[in-house]
Every structure is written in C-alpha cells, then in structure tokens.
Image: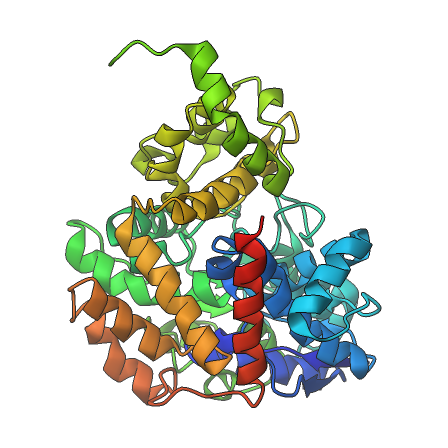
Length: 289
Length: 189
C-alpha cells in the first residue's frame, strides 16, 4: 500500500508530533508514504470563507500533483483532509467546477485519485484486528476520552464516521486495551482559530471540552486534528491562570501517538515529549515508558 | 426600533439574497425557523444574531443587518448547524457567502477575526505555505497585543514547533497567480 503523503503546514510546525507518529504507524503497518513534492497550504478555513474558488483551487494543486503520480492522498490533518475531500467531491460532481479550478491552478486535476485521512487508513481500512495484531503493549485500562471535533465527521459526505456519535477512535482505544469513556462532547467544536483570533469567545469552547472530559473521569484526551490538539494542550495553563478554580492537567494525545507507543515505539520517539501538558506521568502509570 | 416596511425591504434586499442563495446553494425560504441550528451552535451565545435569526433576516430581505452582523465572522464553520438541520439546509454555507459579501461591501464587524484571516492568506500567498510564527507575530502586532501567547514560544522552539524562517515552496509564483485569478473570479460574480 502506497499513498501520496500530505503533511500540511501544521504537521511541519505546531503539530509535529502528528507527523512523526503518523509516519511511525504507517511504517509498522507496511504503508509507504511519499510526500507530495512542493506541496502548498490547503488554505484552511481562511481561504474558503474569503474566496470560494481559492478554497477549492489551493487543495486542487496538491491533488493534481498526486494524480500525476497515480497515488491516493493521505492527509492526517482534519482541516487539510476536509478541504481536499471537499475539492475532490466538487470536481467529481461538476465538469464546470473542474474547469474553473483548472483555469485557476493551471493544472489538470481530473478526480481520478482521492484523499483519505489517517484515522480512515490506520483504523477504518486496516481494521481493529490488524491494529491489535501489531500491539506489543496494552494501554492497561487508561481512561481516554476520544475527541473528534468537527472536520473529520462533518459534513456527512466528507466525514468518515457518524456525525453525532463517531466510534473509530473509541474502538481503537478499546482495541489497544484502554477504556474509551462515554462522553457527550466528542464532536463539539474547539473553536479552531477563535482561541487565537478572538480569545474571549474561543477559550470558552476549549474550557467546556476540558471540563467535560475531567468530569467524566478521563485521564487523557485523544484527538486526530492538529488544531484541536494545540487548543486543548497549549491552552490549559492559560485557562488555569484566567479561570479561577480551574486546574487542568489533562494529557492530550494524537491517536497515532498512542498507536505507535502500543506498537512498541518509545514515547519520546513518537513525539510525546513535545507536549505542553506533561505525558510522562500517565505513561509511567500504565507502564508505557 | 423603527417600523420596517417588509414589502419594500424584501424588494430592496432581493439581489443580495439571491446572490447568497446561488453561492451557498441554500434556499433560505425553505427554513421553517425551528432553531435547531442555534441550539447546537457553539458560538451562538456570543453572536448578535443566532444562525436562525440570520436565516430569518434573509427571508425578510434585511440584508444590511446581516452584512453588518458580528455573527458571520464569529461562525467557526464547525457545520453543526448543517448536520442537524431537518430541512437539509446549510447555514454555515450561508455564513460563508455572507462573509465574502460583507467584505466586498466593506463591512468587517469583527476586526480581529478579519485581520487573522487576512494575515493567514497573505502568508500563504507569499510563501505557498502558512508560516505560523509569522502569522502569530503579525496578528499580535496588528491587533496591538504583542505579548499574546508569547509565553508559549520558548517551549515551542525547543520542541521544534516554531521555525525561525518561512519555508518558501518552489511553486510560490504559481500560488500567487492562483490568488490573483481567484480574486478576479470572485470580483466577477
């Protein structure tokens, strides 16, 4: 199995752990990743809420490059995946849109290849038996809240799981010997760029998610999106300072980090030493050093 | 509040409403005002008009209120509204089209969010990729909060999460042309 790999901007900076751990999991699963040469930013929400065609053209250039190599794309980032899938579907649905995009990109994306995200390839497609077979360590009953956010599940033609009660990451946690806690905030929004651009509004969303995870007894939160990760991980100390009575210290993991660690990688090699909220305590508790 | 003549308001707002309907693919008149979009909206409490109210204002042709609203900027594009709409409408697509139209009309009711998006796209247009450190520094300076999140920088540098210089892709000229062409196409709509 071989994919054209699209890390996207976050995985080369604030989401570096997702890049590292995705590559480790792919290697263990025998999946070859070939980075799309000279890839560009997908434009994220900024592009499509500013200019409709720009929001389709930016991902289309990357898809066109991958198509030349005849490879489907693997995009771990939820936002990149969402924008690329939206573009793939738009091109497949309308000859006119396809032409308009081609005029802007000066490249020909025909819709012959498509995009998948890491959770899809590593869990949904691979299957839980394959995940279990690769595990050499167990999560030992670690209580984990699976947090999916928005862009992996909505809208339904783009999403890879149920829009209200997705289970892919829960099932992965269970397969690796953890306890996926039941909680109602699986698909609530973390605010995306709002905690940065409009702190007063955005931080409340992060606060609500962390509080809910805490109140259901989650020892860690697992996510599949670099922006969700940064909001949940980096903002905890900020919230502890700003909101009286809050003392968040919940480790956040990419699902690929937990997979890589269960597959036998050292936590530090999987990226778990780069988080804002320390992960060594919980990993030590479950003998996952 | 002044009395509003709904017949003339509907006529005056018709062009813009039709434009938004075409761009978003949403027939605003199909909304029966159940409010499910607003109930699930994560930022509804911070909005001046909830998503349901935005839909109602468009039905009435009251486009100025909508274009000047903060709601269309605060919308996080999480798409919870669209996932739950019993009429299969997509309020988030309406918000997206309205934001584009508001910008054309010179209304940016939420300066910081507009500035953030502008800086984001400027970075991509210049480099082909987003330079995150540059975006944050540029945004903080433009919004006069130079030390916002600065405490996170040392740990990020150590972890290799912040780059000191942007990475410019080889095809950055092609990206710049794409921006120009897309802007031209948007202006002609």
